[in-house]
Image (cartoon, rainbow, N blue to C red; front, side, top):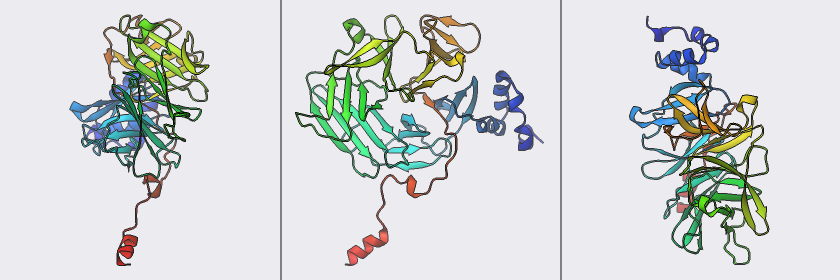
Length: 370
């Protein structure tokens, strides 16, 4: 009898009584022991990293890690956004689909025909009738917005002519705020899109672009990382910027002025905590004092996850006494995913897993006969 042959009922009793380091060692014994740790997944943020060379995903949560395999996914599949327990992905052929990483369910959706959007996201769960997807792509003299609502089988595209490079979209996932979709530009500019009234009427355009939202001109051209956060339960939008020259982290609050937006510096997040990446950004009120006023990035110092404290103005790790004002030497995982496992596993009907109603083959035959 090998280690993998132990009764699962006995194995379930072991992880809760282990400290973090021992729990990690437990998960590495064999696949069945790793699955025991994975099954104890909590409804809390976790960082998931695609280890393409090993065809597996490494999952970090509460200073622990374990591995998950997704044989259903192509190794080159790209994740564009993670929300509501689902991933919005594309395969080698750039076909879009939703994937649930905890029950392996998929929802096929139509893909844009003529445009590849550099930034794309969705709002509301894909099983909800309120769900919609938006993407953005900009060129030298234009900005193109694409949208697809639940129940639709074809994308709608809205193009706006602009001045030379007036808006260059960043990788920051857009946010939904007061009925408008907010996009963040490379220089901190803001674009808003009214999904309920998609028109480019001159008197009331759906797409509006706001420039010079950052007062300091030098800062606008030294931002290397862009993140947009609307904390749960809050009626305000925040931006997290990392700058090139000083490798500093700066936080701003978006303030609406007369016919414009401005980013105002934020020195303290209070009891809020942010989790940011290029595929998912979210924030909420921390349940513990040691979680508040922090920003978690997909970065590591050695094998330890890194966070930035607004209280100390330094980077720290969970373990040890490491701290640094700069982010030199960190391992960056720019396309790692922050993900919150759903608290429950709802039983979804096949109808809810369809993006738009499929035509009945029998009805088509009847129509042809008629």
